[in-house]
Length: 201
Image 1 (cartoon, rainbow, N blue to C red):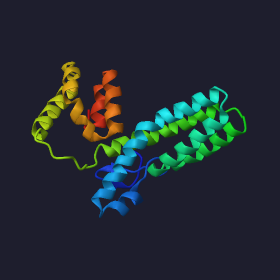
Image 2: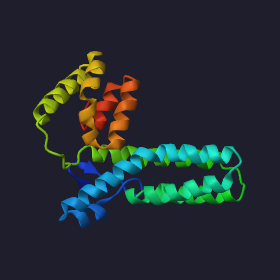
Image 3: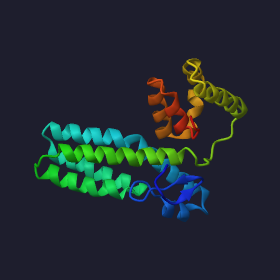
Image 4: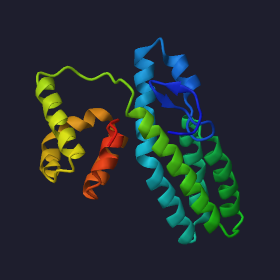
């Protein structure tokens, strides 16, 4: 990231877009609470874009109250990421939808701001140490994932086949990151996969 912000584990927070410094500081002394916050962020990132699409579809279908309800809920969940820029736009969008005003430009702007917050959160989450359940297969999984990363970096198409082998182990990354990896693999965008994994392509 190039935008100046507060760093944690080498990743910058971006004021107004993604900034959970206070939340993480409060949970720093309690590993269980910290892990719960990370899981919450995984969940928020995993559903945010589909929630926005659902709100847009409801608005286009002539259901402004349903669209406004979804936008209101999305603002609350994304607020946990410190996304104050999106929060301000979504508030304006919610009012426009409720009042029957033209909202297409606001939807477009809100989508862009939402995407920026989710992307920043996913990049940060990729560098966070997570508590994983112990497993006798950990060493094998680590070796398989390391091999897969090498194939990705080499732009080797065999990374697609290898992905199917390591896919179950990727669940430990959280739902949002696993979904982002699945989407990038479907596009054969190996560079995007490496970014989600916290690697430099």
